Image 1: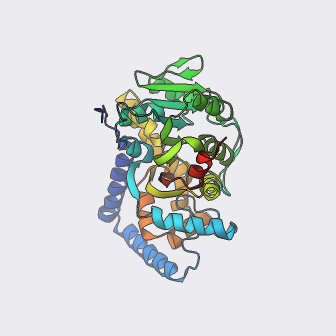
Image 2 (image 1 turned 120 degrees about the horizontal axis):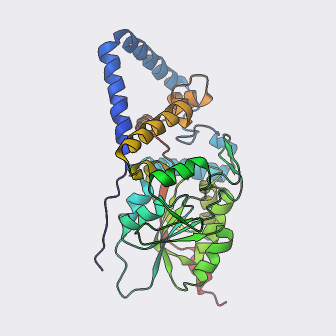
Image 3 (image 1 turned 120 degrees about the vertical axis):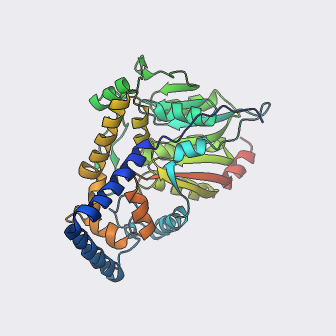
Length: 367
């Protein structure tokens, strides 16, 4: 094996800050507000009693607590339950993509070429950091003009086509503050061993693979978000997956999106596979890349407040939100602790292909 140059890939400072804040708030309540502490204790007892009576436990996807998984057909519902049982033993504190990239072996010196693909990169930091973590070249695919189709997140938010364009004000600000530059509307590599491919993966992915015959996919990062784009990418790449290929899905715990696409894909081809990790999605690590320490701290506090006061974290404390009751009454205790320890989403999951099933048979058949 060749030597491999890896750099630090933790990038969880934002979440450490949040944990410090949460611990500080807890200590302040205990020391300075004993009456409030008593009220919290009473609420905890009520919730514990409620958990004993609640019959809806474990029917809702962690971090979303929205759609009842029984709304899906029997086979897919069983897949979701089995997935959650397995994933709960695979929790990690950091970002799943970087965790997996840092564990890739060095490519063989004289072996067949291997690909590391990052599908859906926004301003490109996931691609650059995956290259640093893996010591390999990473190819990043994106339109850079936003989603190519609407994205319905279970029974919650509808994110419209075109969202996440790098021309949006928030993206432009992040581009400035993280030192990214653009060349023809495409982010530059900034000294990393990366190459960005502009355009919809419906148009770019197959020609890219055709130009690299025989190259297996070692790491496949899916952050295209929507069911349609995810399934298309899996189908396009199917002949390049090998035993040992790692698939990382940034939004896996959205049951009508990436999870559904992978379920249908593995079912169609009889793949053998196993879950490897469940952790933080990529978006939060962008804060770590802000160049100015002062701005980085501001971004961190802003991100924490966005998530807990204005974002999805609100379901933890907004009593009138149905997700509040599903979380506190129905979530496993381990999930509650895991979710409360993050300043953002924990929906990213990695999978290892252990057997090719029908894909192997289709490859052996004459054209």
